[in-house]
Length: 131
Image (cartoon, rainbow, N blue to C red; front, side, top):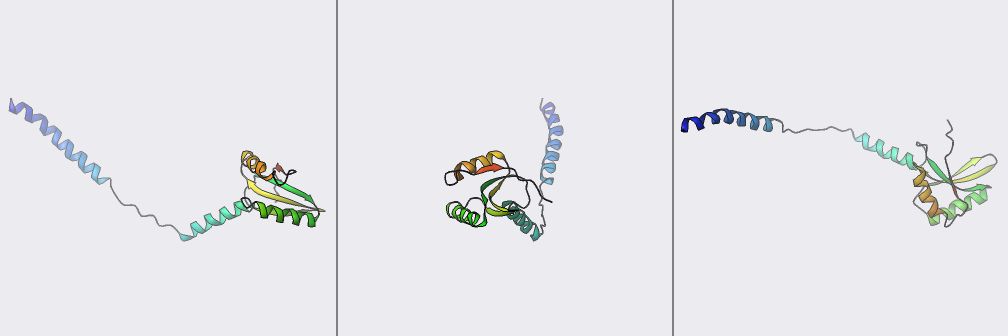
């Protein structure tokens, strides 16, 4: 009776040892060497995205007219809002005040609701890309 119960152990014991060996063999240490310029490039890309230089998104226009009016509007905007970058664009013979670079229309509309409390004539549009 004892001999019959020992035979299965001869098959199970090597199987268990093999599984333990395989499990321990798969543990290791991975070292990744990363160039320091990668983080600098990611920061630069993020900055360029915020400054409307890379992506083709939606923008909010606050003003269209003379330079003195554009300067006044952008100063007023920067005093009241700091969440989105603003810039003055010259298109002969007028100046435009543009705010933000939003990837989705929904994101632009949310910002527009907040901006329209101070600038009721503001609107969202998708600017044409100039090459």
